[in-house]
Length: 294
Image (cartoon, rainbow, N blue to C red; front, top):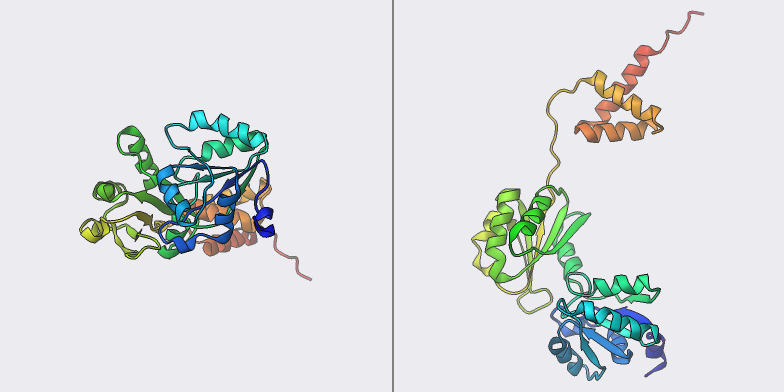
């Protein structure tokens, strides 16, 4: 181990190490060195991670850590960490504990006072968001539940969210998911599909939910769906200015600065902040006593 590599691995630390999404050249020298020099690697699929380790000539011991054994593995891993061993948690591809097993171990480690160190690196979530051109904030849903009440609840939450939203999806489930999203958001809702990130057939496709449903090319490879934000609804009715101004005055009386009170009330009623401000000033002028003549 070189001096630089030694400084990257400390005893008793849980390292969260992202692995390449597709292109092996994306793996950073630091990530490679950490996996090479820790005492133990916890892998979602030891066969998948084994291929990566063999490619880089790494012989670190691997244990499986996945959705079906995490309850058993968390206390075992914590015991190793508390004894001073260094552990790297990896997913099959991308950042562990995002849409893969691992968050339970991270939460348990933090609760136990174990140091957790996340390494920056490949992430399909941030790559797809950056490629979409949509604004932040964004919500990430992972994979939709396959069926039942839980899926319906998430779809309802998606329909109620105005921000940019990201989902992972498998090619064989894409048509159904696009149909369900079209039902709750409308077929013309804007969509970016980012597929095969960093691979030979990488594609960033932009259109609508309806257009995506009839594009068979999208039903291939690993997919990230990026739903564009909804445009804010504009209130075209003329408000009762006296009532709205009184609402601003109540916010001011509650401790808000006037500009902040105007902003809050304008957003609440989907009306022009500038027009509301003018109405507030006009109301103040109307109640101001006239100046006495000299």
